[in-house]
Length: 191
Ligand code: S3P
Image 1 (spheres, helix red, strand yellow):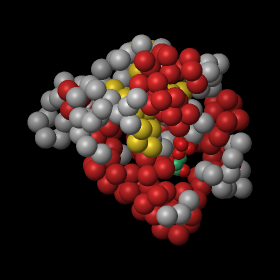
Image 2 (cartoon, protein in one colour):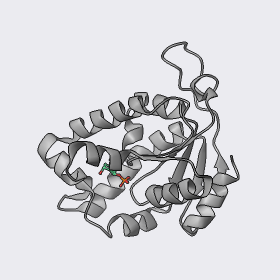
Image 3 (cartoon, rainbow, N blue to C red):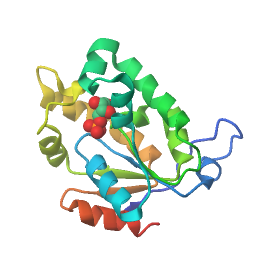
Image 4 (tube, rainbow, N blue to C red):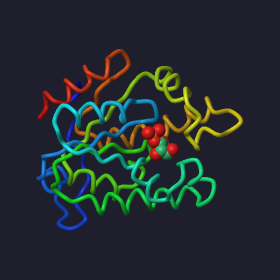
């Protein structure tokens, strides 16, 4: 596991570095990462092993709209989904102990990253691109991959997002050749 260098994001309220300020409530874990990184599976295992409640933003947004994520994108558009992510993070109680499992694009908004930092440490689950692709393309539930050339779109999105994950994360775990249990062990070692 890689401990990432301090980022230089600032708290909007007091202008301190986020790592000094919002991250004061270091009592939860937020999992970020690209599609196929294993966030949902690791989140479930982490919640089971710690007994902490699990808050899966995709699941909660699906329930809120009462339709699947591809249908949310198709009927309401991606901006509505992104707004729902931010609104949901605001409603998740600050300082609450828990495991927050996020969708791959949640880090695109700086506000979301700030809210996640208020919930504890941010762990970036990563893997080699080909492995991410193999995992993510197994199911057709990703609206962003419903394009004529999903593989190229996948590579492009990953390239665009890497700096966002890098900036947001406290820790990066490469899950390419680890089991769900092994990744969970690594996270538990941080607690
Ligand atoms: C998205 C990833 C999805 C889901 C939505 C958008 C993204 O979650 O939030 O389809 O922008 O990368 P997973 O990362 O769990 O696939």
